[in-house]
Image (cartoon, rainbow, N blue to C red; front, side):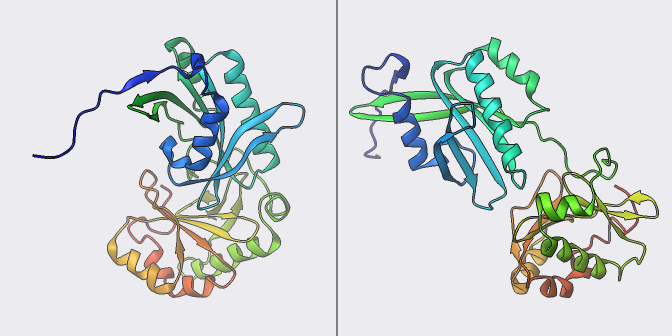
Length: 292
């Protein structure tokens, strides 16, 4: 039989604990942000000063350098001020650093049904995650367990009919990316024109899509950053394509299963490698010019 023995855990309420405070929880998360269960994250900052609005407990960032998480911790039950503070800090950070996607994360020992209903009202308008935290003691050890009670609602992919917030080239060259990274989108477009010369870039607030004969056709979309160009390609995942990307020396990000898209991060020298694979990476089953 196994040498493992059962140990009964004891739930501890940190709100009334004589020694452990909120700072202790922040330090544990800062040491290993993965304990939140939100993926492989790195600590960007803690006790981050917000202009005229106090301090953000923790700022975390994913390792693709595309998304940031504004985390607010509260011992005991969440309340109105905790919710308002979390959303306020999220809003400040997203306005200061629009080149990143941002997600608000509220952490508390008790998220009652009343406040869960309040949080759900924001979900769909604000990317928001609610985590209920439990501290448990086993012998002389204390552990933290985080349970997701509300996940953010995806705010939507670059849908083919989502043209409600147009932008222009200057916006992408100065606010989101640079002239160099937008020019990389031009280069990629020239490769795609070998499939259909009618394709054009369409500048929207959150992405640069494709336009054909007066209609959106976003089988490929672009997100220029300061030093790289993120490219999203609607294409079913396969081992063969994964191998092609590896051989080309490209930098694939995570595959977006919900949207059925490969996501690539291109540096200034990568477009030549991508050109070798243009026909392989363009989804023939969707067909250039078919809006989906």
